[in-house]
Image (cartoon, rainbow, N blue to C red):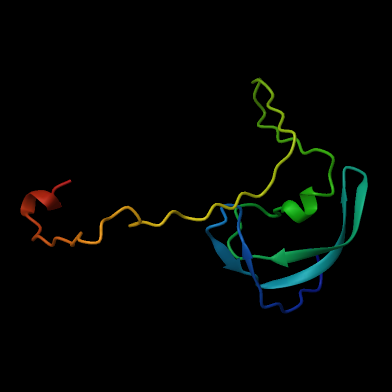
Length: 115
């Protein structure tokens, strides 16, 4: 799209939610100039089905003092001092069941199928 060479890459990256990942379609290296600031040799990944033409991840955002998101409405400002990735291990689903607990299977009734 910008006449940048796209190189083959086999890599999976995690999305912001942490629970989803996507296979990249390629990568390229470019110099980004944003509001007068230049970021040389920045590696960019080509992703399928993006919701925006360009997503700037945490690796880019770490090069900034702050980041302002404007929604174009006259509402109060929220300032967050720092962001960090959050990793929480899932709780064991059946950890609190007793050893003698047995599953129960029942037939579904017509009433169960009506929503």
